[in-house]
Length: 108
Image 1: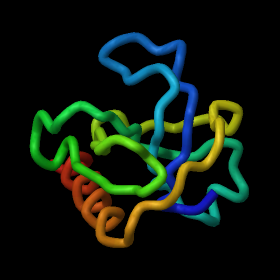
Image 2 (image 1 turned 90 degrees about the vertical axis):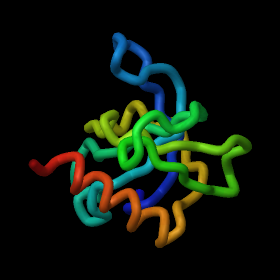
Image 3 (image 1 turned 90 degrees about the horizontal axis):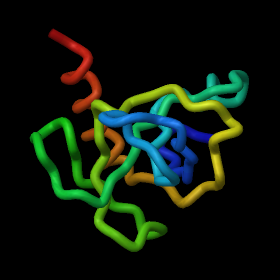
Image 4 (image 1 turned 135 degrees about the vertical axis):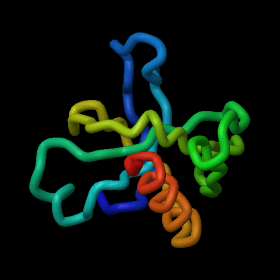
């Protein structure tokens, strides 16, 4: 699993405001770490329109039928057993915008 991959994950067993159910997510952890660890870090995607700029970013991948938004506050560690398959890859531009948004979200 490489950084920037769009994967399908099963996030059931969560409670609001956590994002649950089966959904796509973008892998943001490093590719080397993803080969070694039993978990990876991903940002879930939603088809709901943006609510807050820089916290819900529109991203494009041909593999998904709907317009998708990366929900930055949903950033989470995911066990490999929750991964259901791969759906594509983000463009370098979208991944760079997502990186910027994550840095902004995690800083003061």
